[in-house]
Image (cartoon, rainbow, N blue to C red; front, side, top):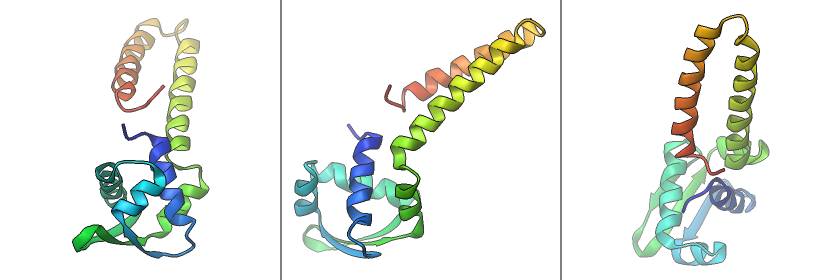
Length: 129
């Protein structure tokens, strides 16, 4: 399973090379991180979609990765794990604020509570508890 922690490991390993342009061999790099090669490739594709890096795939499992400044920002700010934690904390805060509204606006609070419950349920599919 691709977790925020796993994505953080891959991203940190690339950023910690100290280079913006990195030549990787998927087989070797995935072995050094103790993950499957296809999982690593999926993570690199995800990083591309998030504009964290550009990836040029070559023959023989070689990849040229050009890290963008966003890669360094992501690592500096705590990575994907911190992003997920922040989202969880914000939902918890929203639920607490909603509780304080219930005495004054019970119907609206109930409706908003249902919406937040739906959002929380949907997010639980994507965020590991």
